[in-house]
Structures are given as structure tokens and as C-alpha cells.
Image (cartoon, rainbow, N blue to C red):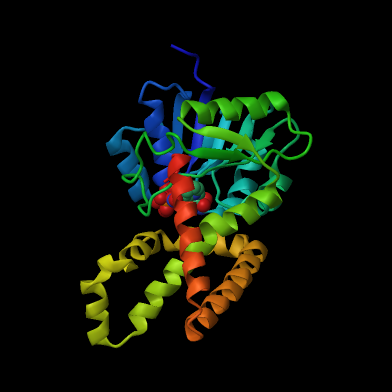
Amino acid sequence: MAEPVFRRLALIGLGLIGSSIARINLDGRPLAGEVIACARTPKTLARVVELGIADRVEADPARAVAGCDGVILCAPVGSFADLAAAIGPHLHPGAILSDVGSTKQSVIRDVGPHVPAGVHFIPGHPLAGTEYSGPDAGFAALFTGRWTLLTPPEGADPAAVERMAEFWRRCGAMVETMEPGHHDRVLAIVSHLPHLIAFTICGTADDLADESRSQVLKFAASGFRDFTRIAASDPVMWRDVFLNNREALLEMLARFMEDAQAMARAVRWADAAYIEDKVERGRKIRRSLIELKQA
Ligand code: NAP
């Protein structure tokens, strides 16, 4: 069997993403010789012990990273600044510090200043997820066939970048490196804006009178259902994503609202060709996604 990528790995946060990584390690794809799990609440730590997906649990992040050659932050991005301040002085020279956060410029801003010299900081983001959260939500196939984007800072050690790439390949992912600002703009359109729209449309439906709301739920299969699945995601995680990718999200939202206005105008003036063209474009995008096996 291949050598594990890390001798001892600390996962800070054992929700959907962290617990999926921990499960992969038990699944015959050696990521780490030893996995230390750290979460905030005793309830999550106790559940991780019950599930048997880590070698040891630690409530204190500073103690969790002691003696680790790999540390991955798997908590909501809004907690990263405090976490990095807590673990920074305890990171070992030569260790890799990475993360799975959905925003990348904010992570570099919040974590970067706390990374001691000699520690390799290689931020990452697996583009895989579900609407479920917590340690029971994870599963070993989560990253299979999905992309992970690495956003190494300028001057990052190529060997450390390759080690994280190998880590994600063992998780079943395809890996690409990207500039952090570009990552945040791409993710704003493919992930953050669709979530914002889903949360908003569910709120709009919920604001309707009681009677029509029950009608909405009764006939939800007509399309609303798909929005409710996305809107079932974790509130803290998404609050943090929106607040930490503000600029790109607002830019994409402004463009979306312009396009939605154009569609509204086409509907008002019965511009059939415009409407048909936009629907056809949507179908094409869906077909391309299926061909790329990302549907
Ligand atoms: P999750 O299921 O809600 O789990 C979050 C975990 O972080 C929990 O174990 C929580 O511990 C822990 N945590 C929260 N604050 C903490 C703190 N201050 N110190 C230590 N642990 C803390 O979240 P997730 O979906 O796995 O998301 C984790 C990260 O992955 C986020 O940064 C998110 O942006 C990113 N991500 C998510 C998805 C997705 O679709 N869900 C996809 C890609 C990337 P307790 O349970 O004890 O509170």
C-alpha cells in the first residue's frame, strides 16, 4: 500500500467535509497515518468518537495540531482568523497548513498573517458538497470525480503544492491550481449566486399568504423543489461565504439582476424569440455539464 500523504493530520472541523476526509482515510486510500479531529462542541467530538473515524479527538485546536505534518481547516470560513491565531504558534516547521473553505482571498487574508516561517500554507477548495452538515453527513465518495482547486500563494513550495494535489487525488478528486481572486469570481457565479437565489426564492415563497404557501409546497415538484434542496444548506457556513466573498458576489448579483430585468422586459413585451433563446442556452449549458460528468 502507498505511504500516507501525512504522518499525522489534524482536521479542524468534522462536518460534511472534514468527516468525509476522515472516512476516506479508513477506506483504504491512505491520507494520514494518524488523524486528529478537532471540533467546537463536545457533542460533535463525542459523535466522532462513536463513529470511530479519527484516532483521537481534541477540543483545543492548538493541542490538535501539535506534532502534525498536515493541518486542514474544515470549519466555516468566518472562524478561520481566530483558529489561525490559536494554532499558528503551535505549527511545526515543514508542516503543511491547508483548508477547504469556499472563499479563498478571505482565507489568505485571515490565515496568512498567522502562518510561521517554514510552514507551507496551501489553501484549497473541494468543489463537492451536499445540503447536509455535521459529522454524520460525510461519506467517502464525496469528492470522487469532482474538482479541487488549490490557490497557493506566490512563492509557495512546489513540493508542498504537489503533496496537497496528491492528497486530493487520493480523495478521488481532479486538481487544478488557480489564482485566489479568479477562484472567488468563478465560485461567485457557479455556487454563491445560485445559493443566494435559492435562499431568496424560498423566503419569497414563505412570505406569501398561508394558503398559497401550502399550495407552493403541494406542487413544489414543478421546479421549486430543486431550490429548496439548495436552500437547506447550513446557515452559518453560507453566512460566512456571503460575507467573505462580498465583492465578487455583489458583482455577479448585479449582472444577474440586469439579465433578469431583460427577461422581465421580454416577458412584458411578449418577445418570444428572446425567451426561447435564453431557455435554449440553459439547455445547452445543462448538456455540456452532463458531457463533462459534472451534473
Ligand atoms: P459543517 O458540516 O457545518 O461542519 C462544520 C464543522 O466545523 C463542525 O464540526 C463544527 O464543529 C466545526 N467548527 C465550527 N466552528 C469551529 C471553530 N471555531 N473551531 C473548531 N471547529 C469549528 O460544515 P461543512 O459543510 O463541512 O463546511 C466546512 C467548510 O468547508 C466551510 O469552510 C465551507 O465553506 C467549506 N465547503 C463546504 C461545502 C459544502 O457544500 N458544505 C463544499 C465545499 C467547501 P461543531 O459541530 O462542534 O460546531
